[in-house]
Structure formats: C-alpha cells, structure tokens
Length: 298
Image 1: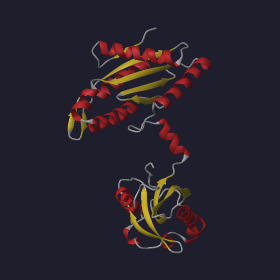
Image 2: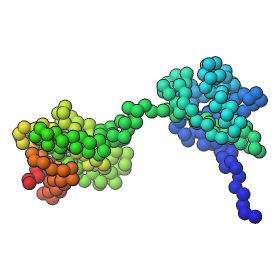
Image 3: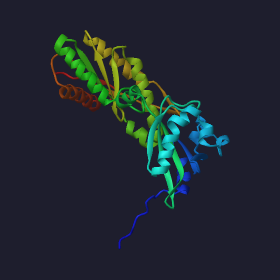
Image 4: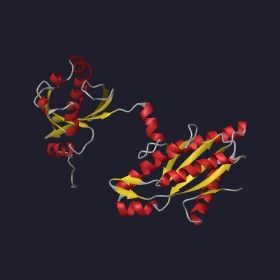
C-alpha cells in the first residue's frame, strides 16, 4: 500500500508564522458554534489598516463589520467556507480607514481532524482597469513607458508618416559603463541612478516627445513632428550635458556619461528597420569613444 498524503498540508501554527510575511491584509478567525467567527490573529498590514488591530482580538466578526455587510455578503461566504472546507473568494468594499474601494477576499479553511477550526482570510486590493493598464504599459522602476508602450507609439508614428508624411526621429540612449557602477556599488545604487536618469531625460524633451525604458540602462526617445535636423540634434546635445551633471545618491558622488544613436525617419520603413538604424548609430557612438551621439545615415 502506497503512502497516503494528508488532506491539508498547512497547519494552524504554519499559518500564524506565515502571516507577517504577507504584504496583503491577513487575519485569522476561530470557528465557534453558531457558526460564529472570532478574530484571534492578524498581521502587521491588517493592524495598520484597522482591519485587524489588536484591540479587536477576541471580538466576533459580526461585531467588527457593519451589520448589513455581515448579513448580506460576509457571513454567507464564511459559512460556506466552513461547511464545505473549500476555499471561497469574493469582492467586498471594506469599512476600514485607508482601505481601497474594492478588495479581493480569499477565505481558506484550516481543517484539523476533519473539522474546520479556523478561517484564514487574505484580503488584497482589487486594481481598477486603469491601474492594470498603467502597470502593463509602464516600467516598474522608473514609471516611464516600457518597451510595449513604446512599440505601440512607434507604430502610430509610422502610420502618421505613411498617411500625412509627418516625420519623426528616434534616439537610442545607453548609459556609459553603467554595469561597472551597478556591480561595484550594488543594485540599490544602480536602481536609484536609473530612476534619476529617467527623470533627467524627461526634462530634456518637449511635450509631444516620448521617453521609454527598454530595459537595463537603455532608454529610447521618440521625437515627433520635427521640421529641421537641428531641432533633433539640439535635444541630443541637451541630453549629453544633462547626464554629465553631478549625481549624488546616498552620499555618493557619481560620474556618468551617455552614448546616443539617432535615426531620423523621412521615408517609409518598418519597425525593425527603424530600430536597427538607431542601434547601429548607437554602436558607432560607443566605438568612437562614447559620451557623444551619432546620426544614422541611410
């Protein structure tokens, strides 16, 4: 006869130990006759939001939340979780200070000797569609648009050129010797430096221009509706000077320069070709000594 795995692998002791490792609100209720549900533990996040502060320990769930919410929404799900011994999930707008408009609530029964003794509750903010879209299209570290967002904008610029001959330019920017800084001073310093680079780049461009982070220390700028080449080159000069200014991070004084590859689009090309033009120009800028820009010539 083979080994038989236990039905539930997470014990009550394990759950209490794990709770403080969660960034989400986490509370634990003991199941009593009725059934009733009495708050017996919570993590720091729950205490800070008021959802499980220590002065609520020992109180019944129906004494903590509004009567109507308890009767119409919360109790039916708690009762279901306890009776079926299966995980339940629902959405709820909590009454606690600082809570989000809508929370995603997960109820996990704690079963000992085939009896549901406790309900472990994990509550997480339910993000709006706008928030999810922002996360999908923006770089987490710097907050600027990411590669996905940039490619969408680039395709739109290509379409505008095809339809209305509206010229645009790309600047591919690489921080010179950034890896050395990151490796020698640590990723925390490197991350802060990248965040400041993104902020400075935004200061150098116009309102209709677009800066994105492609990854690592590589950024790209989309300059739309330029009329003369000098307009684009002035922005490149501005970026080189701005990134050479002193960098002060955590009491460290750092030096940084950049290399820029520029591609000015004044005839039809696809996305891959346009990006390869800027990449070749960037390679040439690095080859001739860095801290400069090179304009790709077709």
